Each structure stands twice: as structure tokens, then as C-alpha cells.
Image (cartoon, rainbow, N blue to C red):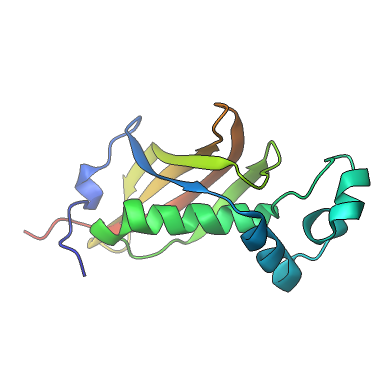
Length: 151
């Protein structure tokens, strides 16, 4: 496990953290969708070509899963993360296609110490995924619990 670099006290409203990039392959889109979201525009090239999307696209849940992996690898492993009490909003704005490269960041929207548990605080964030064309493709608004800095 990495040394903790991010405690609750290190978050401030407006701070943006770049967490990483990932290029999406058709193979992983098909694999995820076959297992978890087998709608025709995710798993069938012919059907996807005739759909409003014109080609295979990633499941929104797959995109969120990729974002989560980037968050862990690029940020959460070095944070005093205690998990999340929930996500308030997910928006799939543009389709994610094979070959797209997603750049993910998180921006702090609000911070508040826990009223009942003095060892932690809640950080509200918005995760954003932007493709290689600079287009916003996904936003996720939610909260994370983070441990307070040891005294």
C-alpha cells in the first residue's frame, strides 16, 4: 500500500486533480457489454451500425468502471479514502467508441467534516471524462469519505 498523501484536510473547493488517461478497445467494450449490458448497440456490430449511434459504443456502466479504475490508480491509492456513501448523479453525455482516449479528472465541489465521526470528513466531487477531441463524455457527481490527518 502507498503512503497516504491526501487526507480530508487537503481538499479545498475548486481543486481539480488529473487522474489519468485510458484508450478504450473494441474488445473490452464487447467483453464488458456481453457480460453486463448486452444491448444490441454494445454487442452487435450490425445492429449498432443501424442504431442512432452508427457503431458499437461502450456501455455507460463500462465507462464509469474505467473511470473508477483511473481514480484508484491515479489518486485514491494515495488517499485516506474510506469509501463512498453514494453517487448523486451520472450523466452519459456523448458515446464512448472504440479507440477513444479518455482523460479523467475530479474537481472538489464541497468539503465538510463528519458531524458524528470526528475521524473523517465528506468530500463532494465531480468526475469528468473528456475524449481525445476535447469533448465531455461523462460526469459523475458523488461523495467520498476521507480520514482526517493524524494528530
